[in-house]
Length: 121
Image 1: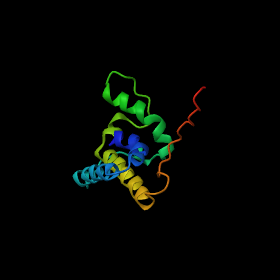
Image 2: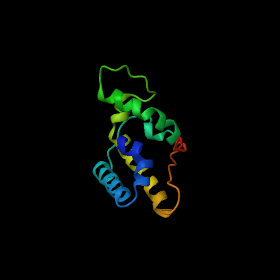
Image 3: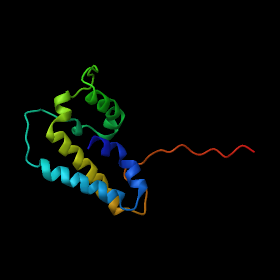
Image 4: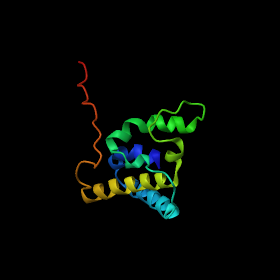
């Protein structure tokens, strides 16, 4: 789910069936994980999107390599908790709903693309 969260802006820009396929994947995760509890006080998905988007790539690298020093404010266990996975799936579905309402407008999670420079002549 973490990768899908990172890809949300590109998913929306891709158009076609891509947003629907991503939403179906998020729904499947939510169905599979519904009702799973834990004892954690908080989870990473409780943070604001703007805070997460900057750290998520680094967290994914830390999760993939146990020898990497952990520096994130949520523990490895909190990131891997089933409730975190479900929370990120909900984030994907929320973005998809926002995009579905305005399919002909700017994506819900705007990507600031660099302005192309005119070719040198």
